[in-house]
Image: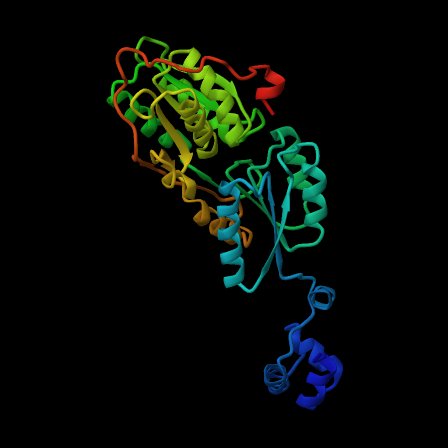
Length: 344
């Protein structure tokens, strides 16, 4: 293994000079700096991250905290973070909180101590707990799919996505649209609900039924589907694509045709949305781009935290006008609607 001592010997300088040259410290002549750089390249020397951290105060790493890496939403954001970090010569350390808000502060604090900056994707902590955590951070922190006054953030135009989805369903003639929501601790679910409240006056043909809050998973959608059928909904707008795929699966199991009997719309446009049959109509969100922007936001540079909101797009794949009369259901056995089961 090539060491810094080997580089110093090949460059014809002292170990201290080689160390200062490799860490871009001052008081090193241009000639010596160039000799050290050539020696390091010819020998294939790579500074050890821990040693570099001791001499420069920089670890060369970015931390990423997500609620659930199994969720393709967060995996896509992680790909964007990793790609941009690699382009800027940094590595990424990833931590998964498993959708558990009780462990989130400890995960954020521990990872923050080991990296140069943190990207928090969809943190579940309420604002009154997230704010002090951001203020106490030693390094820069950027948020994805969440906004806070004192931290730079990149989010999505959720309100426009909800509007596009509802306009699409109403144009098809759906008067009874239901919403299958996400976790109660989700900031983006609150944004969706705010948009729905603004777009729904409660009059006939304009109301949106609230099915409740569900896990942001396939299983959450399975639970929501029974409630949608019981409510007589002809269309279901879902918190995300995983919930929407669960709704599709349960409707199929109960003999309800989609989209002929019930149209389903997701959110995010993850890869699986185009692979199912029928393909899922969904609101496409630029997930990888958000991850890249978040890494750039860590650099700061502006006196006030920068907040960027990325545009979204409705991708229509399979949705139709409502059936008349109401669809016949061949399996009327509902799943549990106990809030402790349906809500995480």
